[in-house]
Figure (cartoon, each protein chain N blue to C red):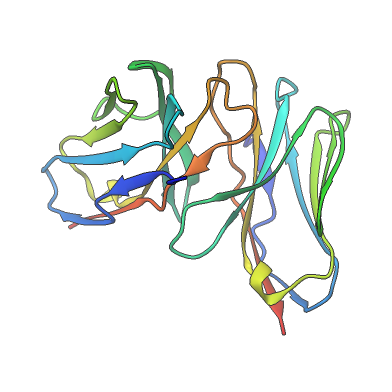
Length: 113
Length: 112
């Protein structure tokens, strides 16, 4: 059974640019969540999509957005990149409720210079 | 006050030791409690989940939740060097509120 796949693994972008990250969940999982991990703040919830609808949202500015496609694949976009957006972005997939755990991908390491 | 507090460590123990990792939380609405393990340059991996108060055992790992004191523990018996990783506690509200609140994580090093 394939795991959660995130692409690309590494990205270097310049301040002011925008970036799109991709996540393919485990087959059959319809919930996809995104998290930002930094040394200072740890893992922080960005948003969660279920059946193409954003179901939950964390406390991040509007520059962070996402979407989910009919095949459950998800993308997140960060516009007008800032140095502080440098982080590991993790995607996690689960069944409807996620009460029995989430499966994470290996993440996309974004560096903003 | 953070919703989930966890001692960041690092915690260094000799191989074979019993390890105790702990978290406290402030929100009594949390219903499901998960422990994740994260190796360097990898995503978190689910180790254990527990619903409400009580104990759950899986091999060398035991998860314990005390909702009355808002205290979560993970015990590792006969620790191995391969257990060296960051351990994250993550309560969940349950239902359709799919949002994990992670502790800062405890870095564990098991010395051979």
